Amino acid sequence: MVRHSTIDWRAAARRTWPLAVVAAAVMVLATLGVLPVWSGLVYLVGLPPLDIFADLRLLLVLAPTWPAFAGLLAVLVCVRIVVLAYLLGGITWRRLRFAALFYSAAAGPALVAAQLSYMGFAILYVRAFWVSVWITIVTFIVLAAAPWSGAVRLRTSVAEGLSSYKRIVALMIYLAVIAMIGAAAEQWPSLTLAAIPAAVLATALVVVLLPHIDAVRSLLWPVPVALTGVALFLAAWGTDRLFVREPVPPSREGSLMVMSGINSSSGDGAVYRLPPESFGFTCEQMYYYSYAGPGDGVEGPEGQCPIRTGAPFTGEDTHQPMDLLAEHLAAQVEGLPRPITVVGHSHSAWVAWLAASTKPDLPIDRVIVLSAFPESGHGYVDAHTVGEGRIAADLLRIAAPIATEFGMVLAIDTPALQRVLGDPEGPAQIMQAPLPDHVRGLSIVAATDLVLLPSGWTIGAEVNACPVWNSHPTLPNSPAVAREINRFLDGEQSPECAPVVAELLAAATRPLGVPRHDQIVQRSSPRMF
Image 1 (cartoon, rainbow, N blue to C red):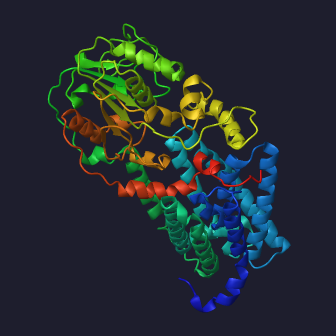
Image 2 (image 1 turned 90 degrees about the horizontal axis):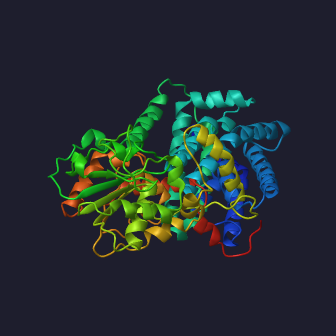
Image 3 (image 1 turned 90 degrees about the vertical axis):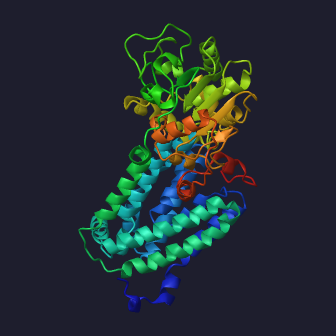
């Protein structure tokens, strides 16, 4: 409960003036082109620790060298410490020390979250982005109430903040408000600068109110956190698995060629778990694409059907040049019974589209792409390059061998990934090419992927099915995807689609990511660094 009678609003306004100065500085720097006009600017005036999270997201992609990064970070942290100390009641050594410890506690999670956000856009790995959002929100809930409890020790302040469900509710309401302000800036970029005063007003209000919210303890505060976790799990695992029944399609003629994603191997990948009967085919009609080229199949590892064609391949084979992989597809569809339907998932969706769009004489009749990214939010610069993006790219290369130890191979300097990930224009160069007139196309994306698709989720396919609430890696195994594929194969019209929830979620969380490549290059004046 807020004790309104104890709030001196005039004194509160005088105490929060540094927030207005920070907001004015952000607006001026964005207007001058020093900062990109980016929906995440609203978090630069956010309640600590949201501000330091936003600082690091900016510095990772803007600082051209490590000395510049370290120097700018030191300056920004000093400014943040002084501002927080003033907001706590005035600058004293005790408050400066508390603010320094507070930002020290937030700095580690902030750096990890910023880098994961960059990795999500740079290597189009949506799980990295969502983990970065999760780290940001959890760190905010843990730390944000601490400065306003009145306790001298940071550990005591954090404990008191976490024990008060009313303060946690207030923080969640604030987070929802500033997320909606960021979503408005994301949806209508012309409102970005106008959104900054709205964000700083929300921040100033919560700075004033938090010290006056009763520290009421409750054992029930984990309940909304648990419910949120359940909702996120269902979104990632796929609600359609509970509510969508498997389709029973008619028998079909022709051939079905399915293609696994990056770092897959013979018999290992989501498409190897596809039962051909879900699409009206039999095992005799189903073929598995090999990244190693034509061959006589694989003995031992199998999918739902025997692997009767194609050479055995490993994860390293998926990193070959894209043009060579397209040639492999062309060789493997030759001689198959028509009509030929090719289904590409994730990385192989680019291969399928590239082959079909650049080789009009191929005997491919239908191309179905699952989770095909038509654009990239970031590339990554070459090692030792001096320029924007250097810090994030260096950290990406440091993270690559660590990720490999956990089973995620980040071979970012291989030919295939250099073309489609290293170059921010790489995916668009492939996916913007039209398919031949005789080839029908279907695109299905995961709803959770929309956050990495700021220009929209539709491509130049004949049919763009409604985004499916399912995780990116297991999208081929979704019953809703099978239903859409069968509708497409039957020649039926896809229903009208307005993925309001998915698009709103994407717009609200995209400001928690790094500025995108296009937003950085569009700055209108000489850079400060």
